Image 1: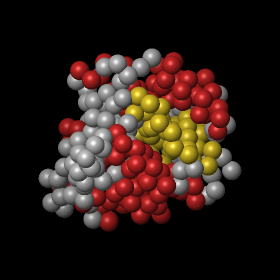
Image 2: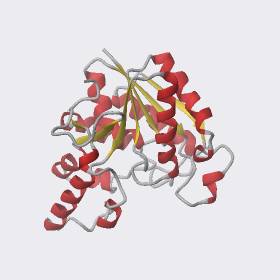
Image 3: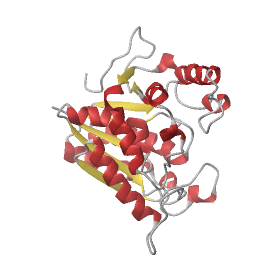
Length: 263
């Protein structure tokens, strides 16, 4: 059996990007370790109001532990950085913000965990962090450096298949479903990775109940009316039933995809 460490920027990123592979790995007997860079302090409280004296970071910490339990994580760690906020906001450069952290220093915090776990596999994000959020971009840089320092042998960039997203958006419009709060065509052009660059396609349809339950665990951020939870089951499976990755160091554009992170 192997150890998978999956590294994310904020609470709730884990279930959206890698929830399926986490639960599938745990069910297969692998050890799953979740690492979150920040407390998500700058998220909006969209539902389930905070209790008197409760901070959003405290709420999101508790939500993450529940999500991690659902997804089968044996260990959950926070690196202790502050949420940097959206792109081009003053909080990007605030003291303690993850986006402003020294890459080598942050990488060593993660490398400590990789060494302790003797990690076989690490997931990070693609070079744009999926959609350009400063903390997501920093996950890419810090994670890649940590793997080098710790000697982690297999690194996968979690991403989305840009070509598949275009196809699904076109299909949604044909079915009269294109006016929700999901990504627009313009959004898609700046998100994810072209299919020709991807190496790994993991079918997680067998674990979608766990993935959706983990999303529900983040009740302060993901409401029942959100794009993630309001989709009918068939549409949810189409959007979230495959998790896409690019394995670092593996040739791109091959004739077929690998279908596991543990090959």
